[in-house]
Length: 249
Image 1 (tube, rainbow, N blue to C red):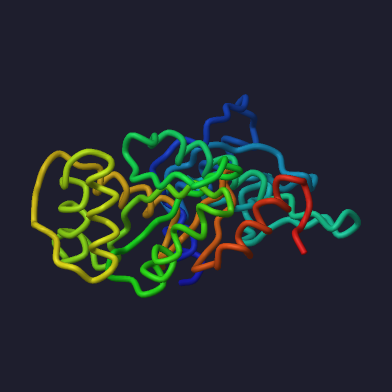
Image 2 (tube, rainbow, N blue to C red):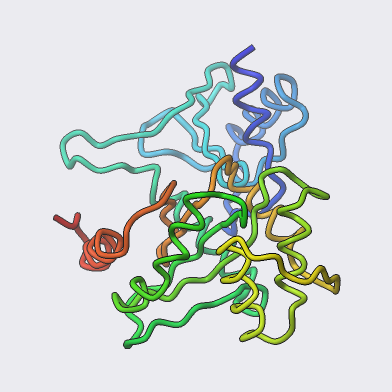
């Protein structure tokens, strides 16, 4: 059933970071969801902007449930008068905390050639064509003042060639050696197979929490998710627009 699939897809094991006082509605909603989808882990429940409708945070997914626990709404709340998405800011905050929690020491970072204006985190698969296209322009992103932080998401899963390549890249040596190995691998070159302690499984777990399916997937410094490749100048314009509090032209 679609209802069960939607809830199951939202069953991500992480903390939303906000604590709210329990209420009778909280208990009612938890009981109803425990009966309908016992596999999910609820991180928080709080009133939504709509009276009688409650926001239930499950990982990086939000669902809305009525106070009596009977009705479930799969979607977003939009303020038509203000033309604002009221759900997205809640999601971006969770994404930002999760990415920041991973830490740059667990990423491969390419610094820009000019003063940094923005930082993006890119979930990448070495075998992905558009991931390779993005990396082939890494210098162009740098010229736009964009720091690129890579985390690995080999979509074929653990044990796949892309998974082994990701580990070999990480184990190539220090930060500079990792950058060089990643660039070589994305250019189709064969790199020496190596193993060591590495964060690739942690990267993949984070991708799962974000319910990612494709690469590249870009997380902005505010926590917004951008799916797919975006060319350097267009991405720079979007990031500048977001920083200014409005859409970029």
